[in-house]
Amino acid sequence: MEELIYRAKILQSALPYIREFYGKVFVIKYGGSAMVEEGLRDSFARDVVLLSYVGIKVVVVHGGGPQISKTLEKMGIKPHFVGGMRKTDQETMHVVEMVLSGDINKDIVALINTHSGKKVYAVGLSGRDGQLIKARKLDKVRYFRELGLEPPEEDLGFVGEVEEVNVELLRTLLEKGYIPVIAPVGVGDEGEAYNINADLVACEVAAALKAEKIIFMTDTEGIKDAEGRVIPTLTPDEAYRLIKEGVIKGGMLPKVKSALRSLAMGVRKVHIIDGRVPHAILLEVFTDEGIGTEVVSTLSPQDTEPSVRI
Ligand SMILES: Nc1ncnc2c1ncn2[C@@H]1O[C@H](COP(=O)(O)OP(=O)(O)O)[C@@H](O)[C@H]1O
Ligand SMILES: CC(=O)N[C@@H](CCC(=O)OP(=O)(O)O)C(=O)O
Image (tube, rainbow, N blue to C red; front, side):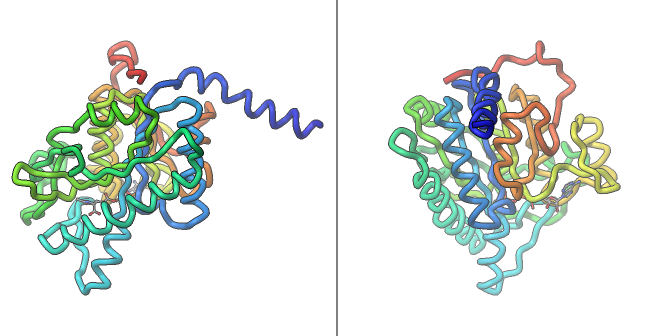
């Protein structure tokens, strides 16, 4: 009996969060580095379904960097990254689209739908579907300068940035109770594909939907300082200092950039969490302590617009 009462209390402790977040949009960036093991992928899918059933409107944006690199290596192509961005020639672009829109997107949709019951379904989309993500070539000079870094000389090829998100398509799906699962491939004016870092896509989608929260699930406990300690709360000033010192680098650069931009565009909360921890999303959403790193803006909550309920 005691055990049952304890379980009931745990369920009840979620009520304040469910009340607060009912109808609000959460964007979950599911990094390729966090998709490490079948059991974890399964618990991710269950958590997404649970959030949906308690009335939270979930959008999943997935990555797949390590999986793309693996396929390229099998083909004898050496992956090459500059500041967390994969240099993408025509052949690489073909592989990126195949792995992201073909394999990974469909796998995640299938997994969520195994747990989804009769009311909630995942719908897989790439930026091509319904012109969901209109894209253009990444303005590398602006991108790197905004991070306080010198832009690289080399051309990054088909690396893109988001020009526009078809927010109506996403709202329509969310209103009907679907879970959009988005592959970060954008489409240009001539129908050409762009490889967009998934962190950047998650950020633009969250901003366009006026989301309450964006959660980056990755393969580290959070953002770490020079001594390797997790920083529980990261401010913009500290972020830029750590980037300058080379402590925040590689795959963490687009994440931090996207985190800061999301806040500036009105997303209320930004978290970077360890996707290798089972039920990491639930720990973040349904506890006061949270986990990982919360990135905060210098704006006070009164200065930002409220997030939207759908
Ligand atoms: N200061 C930092 N704190 C934590 N991780 C960092 C930091 N700087 C760079 N990283 C790297 O960023 C990686 C996460 O980015 P990435 O590999 O692109 O993951 P994802 O697939 O989730 O986007 C970490 O595994 C780590 O190697
Ligand atoms: C331009 C660029 O870097 N695109 C990424 C897209 C996938 C991605 O972002 O995957 P993760 O979230 O797992 O890192 C890439 O080609 O790896």
